[in-house]
Image (tube, rainbow, N blue to C red):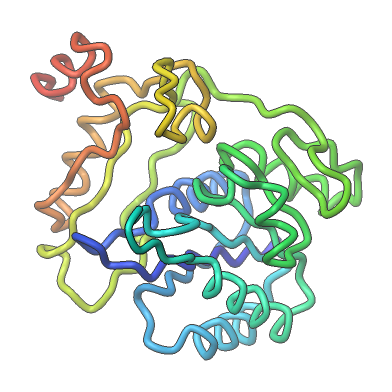
Length: 260
């Protein structure tokens, strides 16, 4: 299937953020044998025009939209960030008849209300690598949509979420799957997540809701190989986006002192 994946985040607070989560889903979708195009609205000037061009050129059969943030997390003067996502959904509706699937960390916090507000056809809460590719398979076969983590408008959750215990089972994305703004590779901070999940249940944090309570890891060898590949591709600035990089400390030490 032809799959258009769109990152609607356009915030530049602190640093430019490539859509690493969407790129992970794109890598898994490619691995499953589908044709994929990624559109990062942070890297374009006119979002509506970019969506129309992508839909017109690519003729997607499914459109996935990644929602990174619901608001800017500023307690004094919070800004609601879903208006642009709603505009993107509307542009997709006008440009294509393909079903629109929501996902991403922001969507996963409020799956039902976000799906209703944005007016998409369905949404996947939590990890998309497995559930999204399974959804594509079901859509292609016109089969039952009992996909883990999938929400349908007015029908709620279709099947309980599942979490991959061994993250090496998911491919790490190639930087080519992250369209970058006009700022050279040497100025981009490329995010890398070595583990997912957190058992601490802090009342101010959404990590457990998005990624589950069990810490799941990539092997140190896979992490170091990815680091070497990305730096060789011209990305000297890489930062870890693990919510619990030093939990447990032993794993963090292995990562920091590993070599291929």
